[in-house]
Image 1 (cartoon, rainbow, N blue to C red):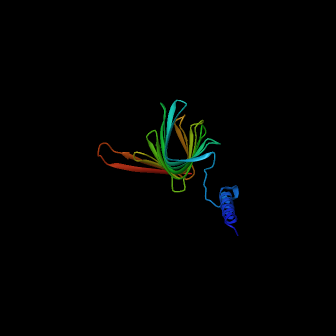
Image 2: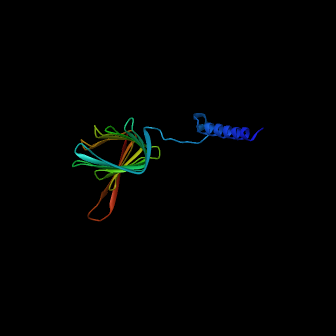
Image 3: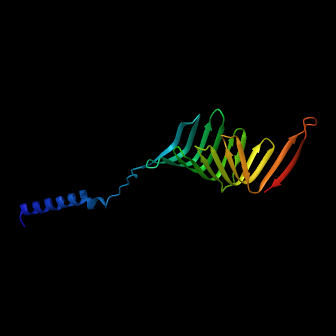
Amino acid sequence: MGRYTRLLLIAGVITAAVYIFLSPKGELNRTRSAPEENVFLINDFSMSKAEGSGTYIINAASAQVYRDNNSLLLNDFDIDYSSEETDFYAEGEKGVYIENEGLESEGRITGHADGVSFETGDNGRFLYDFQEGEGLLENDVVYRQGQNVIRSDRSLMKTKEGITEFDGNVSVIYGVENSISGGSSDASRSGG
């Protein structure tokens, strides 16, 4: 084999290797990761929005943003809503926010609404509808205001009307302070 033949052979091998490496088939051999076009992740997420006569602020350790349906998958989040009529705050481990519609969360949920604190058990569920101004809490729901405690399977907070309805295994404990002696007495009433 002559000198020029060897050079042509080497050049051909190098050209073939470059072609294979840069061709679409060669790309399969290299590792690439591209994010989904309409989904992205934001760490230390914070968002505020005016809604009706109030404003809500959502904070999360991370939020997966789905642009195609204007929703967020929230991790370790809290939501704070305030208006002239309502002061509402809730936090949870995982939640889904859908723009202009509402918020859904599962797991342990804690918070307060107009001076009354609430919480659920570890398997709690919370659905909040922004248009209706209603929040449904389920599974081992407990409300506290001072010494008063209400437990139930479910509650429906109607923030626009300023009322909360309780349903399923409702238990009410009233703690009444006696201002003369400084002591306290408890009375409880349970119903279904």
